[in-house]
Image: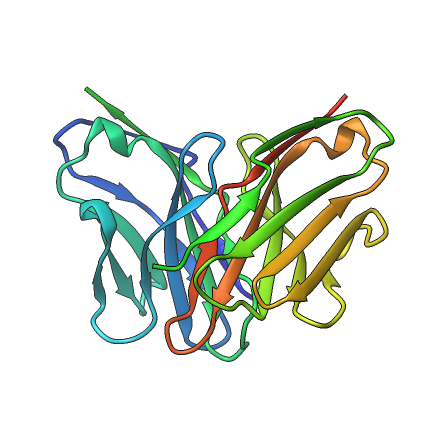
Length: 115
Length: 116
């Protein structure tokens, strides 16, 4: 079975400081990993994904994530946070063998960037 | 990039009535779409997988007679909440997937359903 853990319900960071939102995963095969952001009463916006290749993935709005197979982690990072980054962030996973199967989501982490 | 349009964005209905939510892939064909439900401050809960031209696959605990899903074309899936009750009030989100090699999962903007 596939699962995702986002250990932090809330992350607070000062504007201009680096931010990290943590994610660990469990899959039976090779993982396909995703990060999405959600603003209030909106759908999910794609930030980045790891399918294969370079472990450091760069995505939208200056976000990046590093795939670490030994630690089964895919933490989301940004060098300098903006107030507009405040939102709900979801990590998601599927394995490589399952065809068009749905993503399994973590519970979400609320990021608050303080001016 | 891929765009998924979901309508309506917000709907209020009376108890006992039915509500239809549409999910369209605008610039790609989606043989598979997913329907999620999200409770306040919680994650997305998968309700069902919708496959074009076949019956939807429902997750355990989701009433298929209450949440009717139709995927009649490669660009449209609909979710109908039948005989709605206040406990059906929630945020519903659809997702369409483009398969290999990109595995792009694109989400609609969501529908806020309020049953009064």
